[in-house]
Length: 196
Image (cartoon, rainbow, N blue to C red):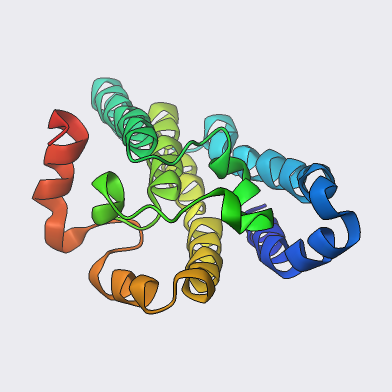
């Protein structure tokens, strides 16, 4: 499923010109039903899959629940910060900007100053949280498979943004982590929890 999501992500960027040329101002309508619906369904199947996987118990239940809730909280906080930064998940997150790039500007501030793809970070944290709540090794490994489409989609988005933004985005790539800001982890945690 993770490979299918990555393949659909690849098609998003390869087919967008075709949709614009063929459908004009209605391009997003067709793009949404042909590419976004399968993308969302398969990605959320990956996201929720850890809940349905059984295996040997990983941790004491109270530790697993505590850690799972922390990761789910990270998922929620990342989404709050994405909205605060000016990236509306309900519109831009549905890839409207891919079909009509003039409808959105690239966001570089707030959470985007720490990681380039906070939406994928949020999905990754949520999946890990669900894997921890299921409390077994297999579910946790399955939750990590979301890294495949997250890294693939992030790569394609960065490539598209380099075409749109040029050197500004290249510099951003050099200075900002894709998903986990290892060098700026404390500033990132401070932003997530204390909004500073």
